[in-house]
Length: 390
Image 1 (cartoon, rainbow, N blue to C red):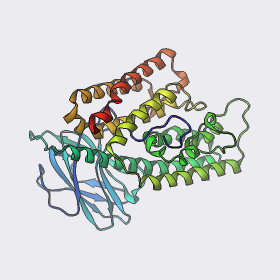
Image 2: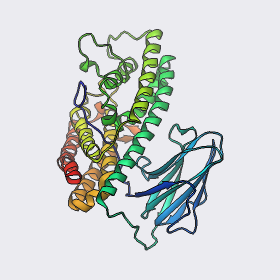
Image 3: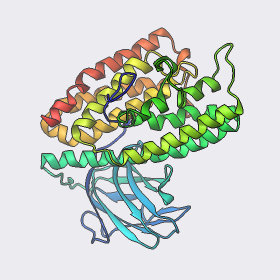
Image 4: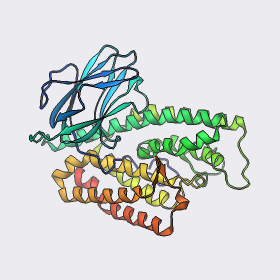
């Protein structure tokens, strides 16, 4: 990977075992509804609410008419049940404006989300698509399927970077103020947004070392900043000298500035099917070479949060490419789905509350089981790019 001090990847990320396929049919302004519903599903977005006129709809072509009744520019998303994979979005809806999101949705469980101010994870609610008996029409044009997958992944990267900057600012404020308890609580969960899109983030060779360099990665004379510099101070080893308030403030200020730079730069990245496929494999390689070994979070031992986020990222890339893959190699699609499901089930065994147990609490047998499932997934995942691009 460009300019990267450790094993890097080129692009990709996530999805959980429950994600369902959806094909983006298009985003238009004030268009007439088409499809399985009697009329557009009305959505009202304000600063505090995201009102959807119904919580269910029959499968087929769906139209969401999103009206911004607040004072800030807003966005609307339809997400898979896992809340991570974005199946369709309409953005930059100014106050008083209505825009339509048109999608083709098979039966399944989803989430709707309004994002007033276009920041954070948004105001979410469950949404269910019931079986209508009419199979949604999928664009048979192979390149169109690939383009849809790339567009959906671009929306996913945008969403994750927006959540990353909001979380980073909250973390940095607590860290600079010396509120170690709050900063430790926020550390792993905030970093998940980075880990999910790590191949995209790492494509910027100058930013990656600033934000994610481990102490073991440093070259002679290199200034150490970023997440792992803060990690060592929050989870200090024996005989460690704590940072001064001024040092914590400097690290926090730099962390926010570099993350804001990252958000800006990711808007210019061209996401193509080969980058999605290669990125998915690179994320899994990152799990195999850093997370499974416990090297990534050497002081906090929060490696399982990173592990989950990397798997999330790889799964999302796969799910975005899946409609195209099923045309070219349905057996590979089936194999990948089964192996992602098996790995996710094993990870779930180590869940604790909203997170996971610390990595140093796992037995050697448990680590080896995770490693074996990662290896099992890696082989078919390495075939994904060639299957959809060549």
